[in-house]
Length: 588
Image (cartoon, rainbow, N blue to C red; front, side, top):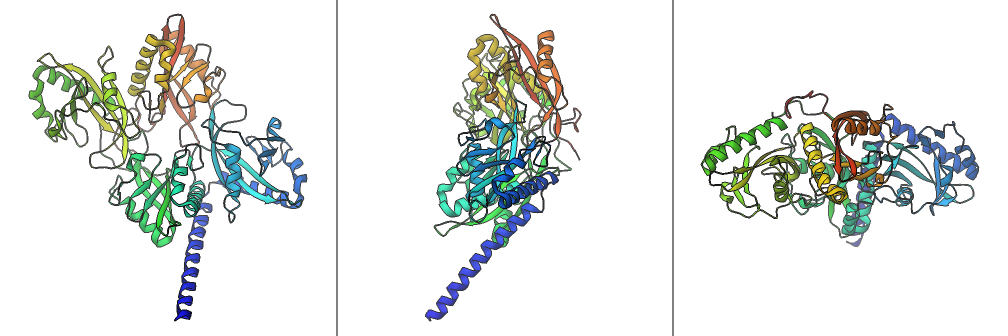
């Protein structure tokens, strides 16, 4: 009996070990086979440099410093660290022979500590990727940099971290697999204590637009740093934009294969058309014996978009709808509510419908939930804590009495929040009482209308308060930061005074900063604003999540506060394919 139990136990150990090794092999294979050429070249460069150190030891360092050699070309160069954080080889001689453990990127992410950790944390995997934001050599504006590192022992017995990096704004399969594999190791070693690490904005698990998520085997999402409000929800029956049971597929892939990729359709932030998003998922065995699924989802390069989508209104059309509703309400008051409640009418189409609030936030009418009339709604916030109702009131307090508000909120019946853009307008009923009427669209395509609206509102604030308004502009939970859009403020001389997205630029003079085609973009849009008062200026930059040049359009406005002159601006990346078409529609 004892012998039979021992054999069974041994077989179980072998099966578990084989399964773990199989999933790790799957992870390695799926990461390596799909790398882009630039990634493959970088990995091979680091491997060859590591081999030089293994064979020749510290003598290889001199070779790595030779300009024009294969080890140092343009933006690509080999660097070498010891495990204590001393920089021994670097493209910048000023960084060599100094301990760089305290070096951090613009978000406070520890660069050298992260590089060393990537190569040393997993004994069976002395290599890895680390992602951080750093300026291109000679430039001021930081970009995402992905560095690949390997731990190697020299003939002297000393161990070194050899690596190289590339400026790459998009994620690749190799990066995602590496991120998830490290996440699995974290969970299997530390259990639930790992979840705090996954949320840490200065940690290794939040890179570019990617993050680690964790599901229980029942479909409960227990980790989601991007949308912490969904943590604790059972999302087993959640569907993607095309009706696919997303979580069911994730659990099935992890339990039957150990690890693998799951594709689904989801709109990118600021886009109305679903794009294929790919998630790498991996089964993990926690110390308490329970199993969870660890994963990471990203929009990969050239991910296909949906060919057919539901037609939606443009920003201009929604503004017209709300203004027409305002005219009806100012003429008929509450008598217009029954017409606004009719599904399929011009007032209520799919997930676009009207609402009416009191100026203090009290709900008067909501087409989707007429029974909620009379509720106090003043404290309602969106998924990241934006005070939505207060933003409605603020937008309509302008001299025009109308404006846009952008926030993250789930569609009716959905769990995950998505961007919603609502146009609101202050009105007066026949009774003489004032209200706010509005309507919104989920995942509306970014539009120049939004940019002009946010810049004009920021300009009015700065014109009134001067530098005292800057903290409001910097507030990431406020109305001046949404989707990929933020407001910036500069002096006429080009000094960055406020920048929510890149606060490290504040205080720097950017007047000589060039775009990707050599255009003096800052000088040009400052000149345009100073000459014309307000202007649109085009230049080329990297769109978030991509590493190819894209046209960016910025609206800038000159503002005067006392004796101080400011340039207020914001920009967006236009959907070139749309050519001014509707926000929805078909796009190949």
